[in-house]
Image (cartoon, rainbow, N blue to C red):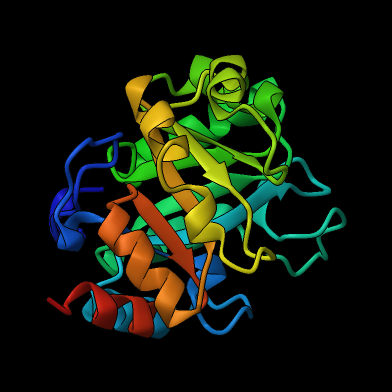
Length: 236
């Protein structure tokens, strides 16, 4: 494949960045960003890219036949879409991918690295997981692709977890907290950035919380409402 078949839309930096403009905070469409329902249709991906979305979050796991498929839950159905098709659709829409890896083997980690390279997505991807072991597999197979470690506990030491996972980003999953944005304000955010780590946040749809996260200049924000996030990012 040649790059002429793909959108050449430029993305903000996909590595941890100490100083981002509001328009450089990565806008990540959680599971396609259609209100919580998986939506990776090409026309939908083109729509969210036009709004200003940068990445689409995709749940990836190993299917029954050993191939990589897109599905959130542990038992993917036979009709689960191949990861290759969704990644290719994202590339054609001018998006990057934030891959939430649910399970992986050494062989399928190599397959994933090869897939990203074949689709010209190695520089337009972040590999994420709640399992540090899976991220270390990714570090071996795709060492130049940034990695992000997910966690739920508000008492978790993010720096220690990032070191364990060999991750460049920490991703607190605090969407159930009443004001999770206040939990990551200083000193938490300052401590993380002192160790040159980036921050990508839970999926968030509350305007007040989104606005504060944009002011904090976290590296990325996941959301089920990419239109709202894009609108707030354009607000002075």
